[in-house]
Image 1 (cartoon, rainbow, N blue to C red):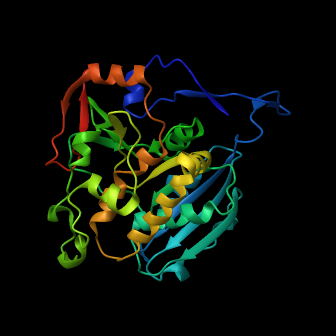
Image 2 (cartoon, one colour):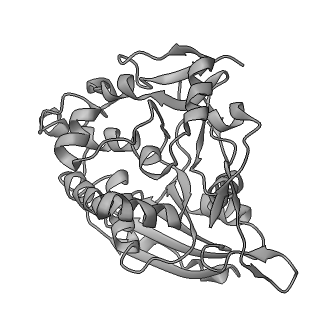
Length: 321
């Protein structure tokens, strides 16, 4: 299991780069290194939301497989959304690939739906692993000054191995990945985010007023109590499987119902829908440990500015360095 450690670099913590935990060990391996028998893992399951036959697969080799820690085993799971599963090659020629899974879901949902589908399937037989959720190709560059480039696979796995949430996109200079929850709750995401071909009639059929309205009506969920919650943009992130297990068991197994409702509500369309955009802003809140009272107080004292609710990164905190 993990135990909290003294966090000396709060700036790194607030930017999503540092761990608050160390592994408490109860066994010694053949090299004399202490390991936790129940949760320590050298296995990564890569979950790829797949919908574009013809885009190529070289990025999986270069951007993922070459960056997995040496000696770790890999399971590749493709969630095929657009009937392109026949184009997926057999990756088992690579020495560290244990298994390749293909789950076909048809054109019934987007990327966030495929992640929710995987999580519910995974929980039928969970096992220790770092789970890397990956877009099928590198996200386009964000023209948002408060987001600042990408973490590679190695960095995300390292963060997740230490029981934190490894987000694929870094906050920009002088920004935190934490958001003021009250401001974030008010974000509405209007048509500016819709692709040109998306049908406006299906974008927000439930007439959600904002993120909090979606959480309450669709999921019967609220973020944990602290005033600040992390947000991971871009659709690629890594977490330890124990985070999923803990979420399902939280609040008398309420988390299990949340994820089942999430899968259901995201399945309504394969086109752009507002629910996908809300869920993108929710994953880190689902699977991150809340800040302690001391950490929350420190973050509050470091706040220089909060991005207003009219912006796509509503609630993001600019910090004093």
